[in-house]
Picture 1 (cartoon, rainbow, N blue to C red):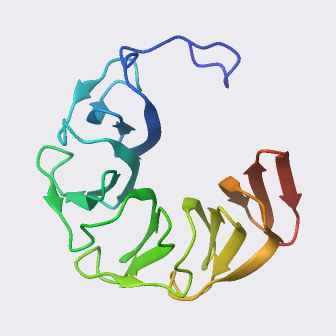
Picture 2: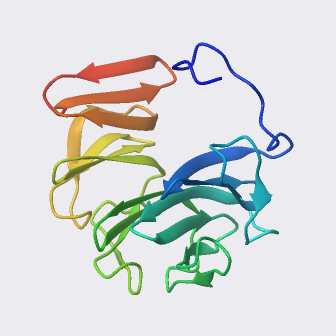
Length: 198
């Protein structure tokens, strides 16, 4: 039933912890506690699609490429064939909770090491100036990327290399979302709302 979220049915993916979902050309991919799963029928049925023994924290798509953030200090993996095969990138020793893709630019949010960024589709990585917190989530608004972190909301205007506080500090922000100049931040105290990008 597709009715804008008024009714819900459980899919066949019912025995794993699902931490993230992304889509490529109508195929859904889910990051789970037992690898990556995919669905070709809008999430009704799911089949396992690689990294089977890994705890996947995040998954994102850029073009036809999938990026998976993996736990137990395994870093970022990439697939260019719809999740059939995966290759580990040079960011291979961090727990990656969040991934964001904007063209060739990739940001990876880690546990206690802040943000790593890549300007070449994940081939090489550099640690950003934001380097000592947990990064839970990302959201783009135009050329600005926002991050939800263990120390508030931060923003970057140069594809994740440098970061500055975006209005909420000393607050655990586990999710951020943007809609034009509106910025929403999900915290343990509820939702914060900014109408001017923080």
